[in-house]
Length: 195
Image (cartoon, rainbow, N blue to C red; front, side, top):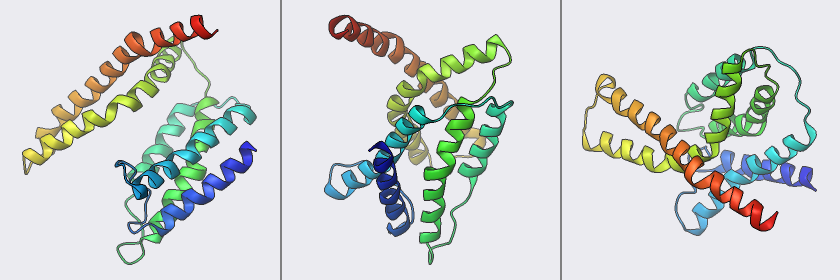
């Protein structure tokens, strides 16, 4: 059943990416019918594919997995839009391929990484622990940064990078505080009450 959900959600995601007016999967941030559909479509495939991957994939042992994942991720994310204004569907195909094929592959390669030192292990553990809290808190922080850029027209990279770094470090700090003061205590409490 899970495999069928993954396949169906991949098809729905590809349809959204290829047929959307902008040729991408952007959206899902407001509470109207269209945007809720976009948001659900954007999250269904990654959620179900992640569940399936965690149940069926057996990680291998890949040296330098972090380096390879970083390079591929940078290449995928730094790619400019494809197809131009007359052929936005081409960019939709690119985004669908990235989300449906490349990102699960990156997750698998990352999970297959061989840690060389204790420092790497601690860093990976830390990043894994804050990944979901960071996902939850990053959006308002990005809006602060976007508002600052909007209110200061003509900002140069030299002027912007200290604020971008502050947002990045503030996001990591807020994620860590959220993890330690909310997420872990609530999970402990739920384990004692429900466990």
